Length: 138
Image (cartoon, rainbow, N blue to C red; front, top):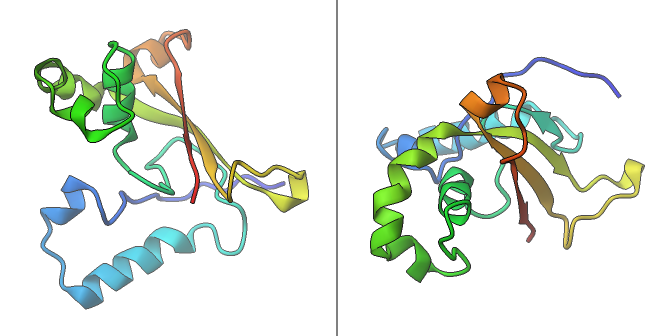
């Protein structure tokens, strides 16, 4: 296994990319560029933007769940407590993602991935006690 430094990109479905108002050719190019870093390899990654199988807003999920808000459906995201906590989502970063990988005989659900998220300031201190795991599959 080789490690390669690569640029990652936010999902086309994030608020950051939506604000760019890309037309269809630009959107297609964005998607192609985002997936090109992996070539035909599994999407294992240390840091950067997550390669989301489902929702790319895992930072919000971690912020709310770590503060006791149920995020198993949309109602949790809409409650008053969630609205007050949402700004804290910006403190979360992807630490690591592991893809399903035939070579390693690992299958996360139905071709899914696991993502480990941390608060940046805690990680800088070497404190990973507040890390969250998010699981997504097709």
